[in-house]
Amino acid sequence: PNPPDTTLPTTPEALRSAVEAAFRAENWPDVLRLTERAVIEGGARAEHRLVAWRGRAFLYQRRFAEAAQTLAWFEARMPDQHQALFYLAQALAGLQDLTEAWRVFAACLALRPDEPRYVLEAARTGARLVNGDYGAIAPRPDLLPEALALLRRAATLNPRDARPWRELG
Image 1: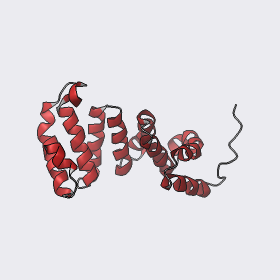
Image 2: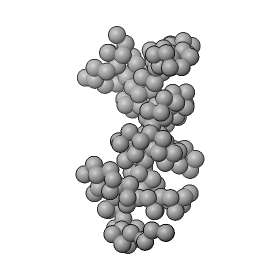
Image 3: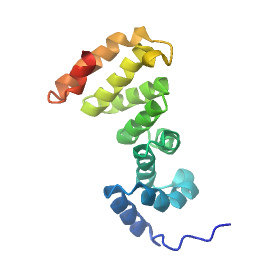
Image 4: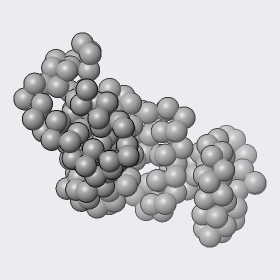
């Protein structure tokens, strides 16, 4: 077995502080190193902030499977944490599991229907489903009205953002 990591903070408060500092510095390897033991050994009792930081660190490194696995903790234990669900949906979309991403984005929107980035990313995922993700999956034309409505809403919620307009063509 590996010897214990003696560089880890010894109190929960010190650990949170160290992880937050690493996260703010975008030092993803340190975030993962610092959170590994607490999140894996903590399981269902792990501190939610550590789980969120760990999941987002995986996401920002494009390690989508690990991000989805980590962030699924929220769906099972804290389904009202819309921000964590948003990142879970992004990880699922990164894995091209668009049906699951669409479902999780819907949960985000149920909690925060007017959050511009939730609306936009749900719309973009819907558009990918509608057109079959450019041939990767079976098209879902039944979602076209909802995806278009979300894109229009995203454009209204954040008029300075060109992305919804670009998606609308």
